[in-house]
Figure 1: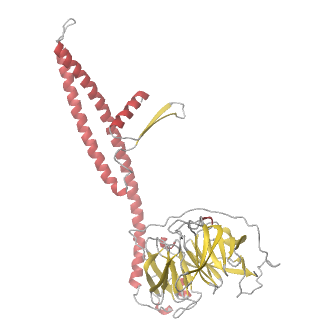
Figure 2: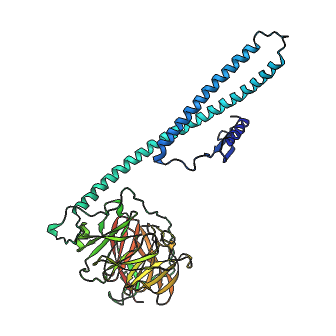
Figure 3: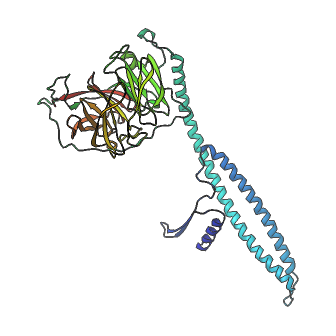
Length: 489
């Protein structure tokens, strides 16, 4: 299309209501000049969603029919004018004079004929554009229908598994024995109709270590304090897989045992929370480790308030967790199933303000060590650096706070051992490191290079259990543990 016609078309569409247009001229690969004209829709703020596709197609069809009818009407009128003009000019000789009145009418008819021809061309262009839009929407509709069919099949499979769980679930506390284990396995009861995955953020940071703690001549780390003493983390063992989640709800989550159990719980009692979903309230409880490994819960708690992310811990008979979309930490007593305390962490970022590198709304992360309960977070005042606070486990009051120089979004996860904060460099690299340590006793941080393995390449939770002296982790559907060794401080 010549440049002049393109310019005319641009002006025409501008006058029809489109106020955002771009005309671009560039040579193609063969050196031929191409004009590209882009016009924003004057009535649509965004492209239609899948549920609007059929409505949009119907609207386009109606518009196309209307414009086709106008085009036919214009053609009929133009044909009438041509016949009239022919009648007026036929039979006139070379010297015949046309009356002055008729000349004026003839000129007006010719001008009207030109305008009608322009309108016809415009209508033809608009009609072609509508047809192209219709074809594009029909193709998009087919793709969306195929995606919906695939999603429906996956949801149907998940619904069947959830239904099996509901049939075997009891409202009261039920203790299972090996001879009376139910056939169904546990699944999180997440809302299949409104499932929305938490946004994941991929930001990997590897920090080189400037200092390496040396091991013994045999190659194994030294532990001068003994297994029960505190010290500096110098070695992390191979991951041991205890359980694998079976559905997408277990892509990431949190699992734990109480390092300071109270009646009726024991050191074997295990809790698990699948955290994929929009309204996370279910907490699976297992009386025995064997029940946990085989997937048979002895009880399912339903929290009175939804939790967020993978930062929950169990300590002294209570579950501590962050309330969804808030900076509030809650203490839920597992035996009585009551919320005993809740506290806002002053200035703490939440719901994606200062998460770990993998995202998942991990802004507030609770931790337990030999000294008690901790919370790991960041604030605007700290400019994204990790802030560590000691919490009173009864009323959740902040007893003391430390601000580190470690940027929270540059590390994959963090945990506390013997009052020292440790960070993991990457959540997805198979072979990464424990890269920083911050000692709350001295207020000094230092770089480390303790090897750490993400066997399944997506660690969303890493916590320390001081009673078992192990790291607990959730790595891409898999619940794993790591042995550790500490050297003398």
